[in-house]
Length: 188
Image 1 (cartoon, one colour):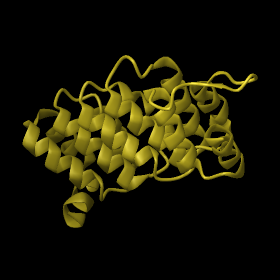
Image 2 (cartoon, helix red, strand yellow):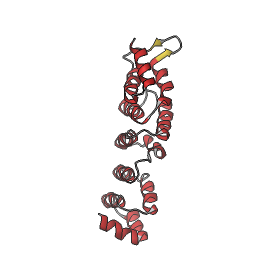
Image 3 (tube, one colour):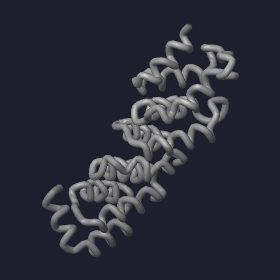
Image 4 (cartoon, helix red, strand yellow):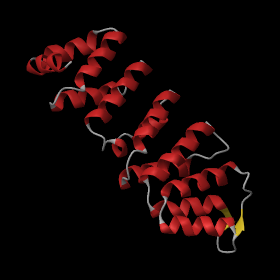
């Protein structure tokens, strides 16, 4: 793959034309090759492939982008709205790999817009899990709102509510002193 990538970089226009005219299976293979390239044109083309008609190509492009640069989650949060659930799960897997303020902000925005009553509950739980893994105490206001009807008065939601369960899971994943304090408050 490294040899093919090196040759592709030398004549990138030819490589680029091949990617744009090839069938889906070949595009997937060429996307994998782009993971071994070092030039900026290939990362730009990978980003373009995130809009490809084939979900398999989009998934391969997303994996390749994160293989090349694991700090891209905050810039690719629009992938949460991809029609393919496998791509959404893959994005959330990558988003939850390390603490990152930009990714946290994007996930918070997404979760504020989506409600557990609507949409795919598995994806929403994965989004809460990724938030716990990549987030910070900046996530606490949303989680507090999900745990309490009236936070000031301490009126809790039912522990059986999906919103409450997801928020408790996220608090455990955050693993910060403030999150621990909130967990204790909920459990008392």
